[in-house]
Length: 155
Image (tube, rainbow, N blue to C red):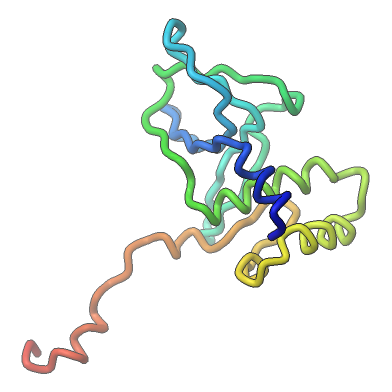
């Protein structure tokens, strides 16, 4: 990934929010208003988990790019910064969404490949359309049964 893209991505203060209705959104946090007890965010996307364990993004609210959305703290259960690879996938989704309609799917893929040319970034199994970003089940804890083969005295 080139330095200009890293600088662009570092200009975002991405946060993940779990809301009282059970939804999970990721957005660029612009500011917090302590008098109103509200976060003001832009470019909010909702995270969905499919039956197959795949996670993908969709727009949370249809707004302009710079339009701020107010989320009252009474509607938030928890919030934290997303994992780094999810931040990258978020930016891929936002960039591809902004290019949609101006370029073909293949052209968007080519642009994203050029922007995110790091070898590790290109190992994901996601698609551009819909913002699919990796097997969500890989975040679940794994069992430790494999350890039994290395500890025969416990069998």
